[in-house]
Image 1 (cartoon, rainbow, N blue to C red):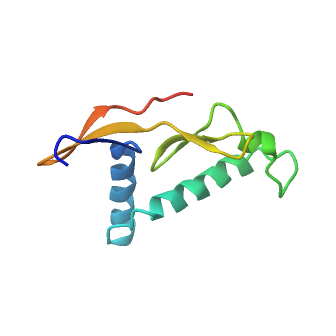
Image 2: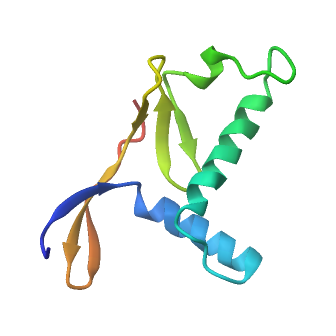
Amino acid sequence: MNGAWFSSSPPQDYQNFARRFTTAYGYKPARLSSLAYDAVALVATLAMPMATPGRISDAQLTNAQGYISPANGLFRFKPDGTADRRLAVLEISPSGFNVIEQAEKKF
């Protein structure tokens, strides 16, 4: 697999999340925990300007500009129910992973 390329969320975003998590809780997080963290961050972001208390509108959720998650980079939900993400391109090397192309910062 040496030299193979693959797409992934920006590694620096996850590393920052993992460092903060480890500092707070004293152990490394499971990789899946970053998605839960991002989901809670999204709900908190959407809940602040709620037009109707207790309800997040479809328009809020499907904002075309998307959302920058604290642990996994830029994403958005599209009106057709699919998700769209901006991913980095990484290359496998003997020493680990090298970022070949950074994830885009806008849609």
